Image (spheres, rainbow, N blue to C red):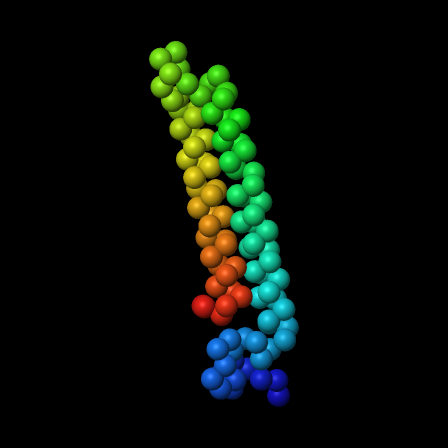
Length: 96
């Protein structure tokens, strides 16, 4: 009978006793890191282009809804990137 987390005793990472599960969690962590890296690379560049767009500011120089909507989109995406990074770290360290 293969070891289960319940029978692994005092291991810090009970899933480490099950090789397929450990490989799956490592793969998940790598995918989360790639997601976080991609978002951290792409969205700041997108913000630079959006902020220079003529539709981003009105005649008085105030931000338009176009800019506000895109800034919210970028903020949400970067928050998801941070959550992906933290979840990847948690998966590799067995913190959950």
